Figure 1 (cartoon, rainbow, N blue to C red):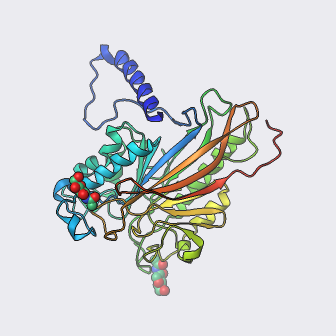
Figure 2: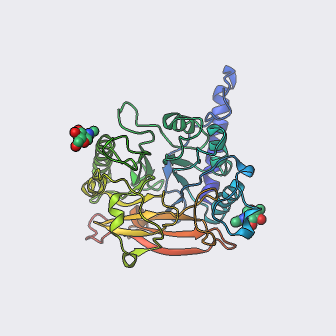
Figure 3: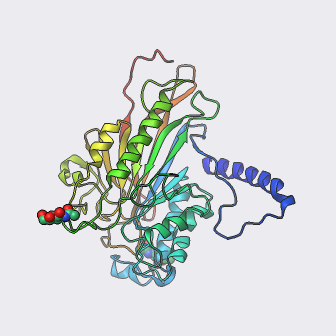
Length: 389
Ligand SMILES: *[C@@H]1O[C@H](CO)[C@@H](O)[C@H](O)[C@H]1NC(C)=O
Ligand SMILES: *[C@@H]1O[C@H](CO)[C@@H](O)[C@H](O)[C@H]1NC(C)=O
């Protein structure tokens, strides 16, 4: 339903756009250029929910000719990148998300002959479903014909994406550090405010520090931008009109897990830990930064395809999505999977829509029935005296 409403409003906007420009012989110059400016993300369905589908580690290469890794011997001959495409399409159909986030290693650069072609094929299911989507980079996206900067610059003008290279006018490390606001329900007091803050960061690829080997980390410049953005959003949320006493919750998406994820034992997580945490060897303090910002309730990564758990540390749920792509290492017989997150709005005693009340998550497996597993609540608003009602 939400997707339908979205496409209707887009069609209306597209019509206006055509009328406005019909007399000026203006043409869209490239096939990938956005023809319609996208409306802001918003809690817009009558049920007061906003659903995010996370797709981690597609590892897309050349489509049909790219074979699957780590599937059962009986599955090998009929399995290719097209199975990854098919899984995205089935997830869209089953969950009808409001938004899709691709958390890096979207393409597997080593095997992709042409990065632009692979990117187009990888994101095609979101585009053909006319769903708004965003992407961040992993450590493999730049290994084909485009650099990290070029990959991100190539993604930004694609249809239906809200991805950005970096916020305008900011000199910060990496490519693909940006935030998106999800506005409150239309007609409610919060219709003009971001009631759910989404942050996207580039966790880099490999360390360039000669004294530290291994994966890269989220740099001080990125954290400064994040802190500033979070503070600005919270100030706006708490300002008039319709001042809110608490901050709107924030969700953070990036590719490489934080070093702190190593401390979780199997008893303190929901989901499974089946491989070591491939985090950077240097801890740049991003968990501490998120704790201090106060609005972040969960951070979502990919990178380790055989880990799919969430664990809570210092008030923040740190979650993997589990490996999605078939041309990525995995575990034969252990289904490829995807994570869904739903934020639900609170209603006041008169039935008016308020801010976010709770955030839940589950995963779906790419099996016959897209089995739904590990449903859990990530965050619930603590009840305060409701004078503001
Ligand atoms: C991949 O897709 C083919 C064609 O739809 C299908 O027959 C096969 O079972 C799929 N393989 C896996 C591992 O899902
Ligand atoms: C690397 O370590 C050496 C020896 O401890 C030190 O002199 C140098 O400044 C370090 N380099 C960096 C980039 O930190």
